Image 1 (cartoon, rainbow over the protein chains, first blue to last red):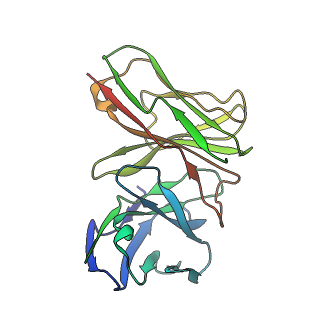
Image 2 (image 1 turned 90 degrees about the horizontal axis):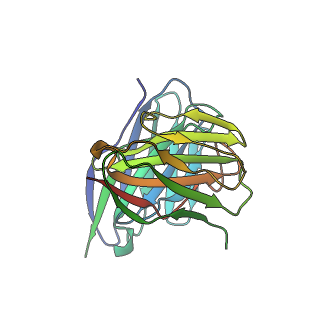
Image 3 (image 1 turned 180 degrees about the vertical axis):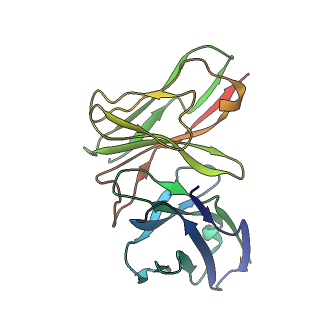
Length: 110
Length: 115
């Protein structure tokens, strides 16, 4: 089967750095993306990695290692508004099929 | 404003009564998808479409139908809803199947309850 594993919950304090890991087992791999979702609202796109390495977008960075079937989302200078659920997702091919992880709930404390 | 519009936002219905959830996008996107979200299970893909008249099954297609007669619209049809289809549904669209710099744009969701 195809699966993505990520921690269910992470807690951190305001101003800190947090890393959310994602390991995947899929029939193919075309890219890994990350989405943020607040309280059952629409998921919003954060980042995408197709090649190994680090992609940086402001306070958020995402890393991919295809040989390890592993990626992570790094959130720096945490703010209260970063409290949300974060999902990793894999395109197993260039077809429109997209597989999501179960999501990580991040709680940022003062 | 570029967006994906789903209707209705909330729906309570009875078992067996056919219903349609509409999805429309104004971005001229080729790719559209439907997902359901249940606690602890993340988002699971129901169906996706790569273009007009081209649709394919995702991971949980049973009990659902879709159609893509026009590029902008991708309705989700439940012919005979059952309580296990109670869920939060999202429609999404994108210019390409693996969008590198902008991802999928999601609608605001439809919370469906089947009693």
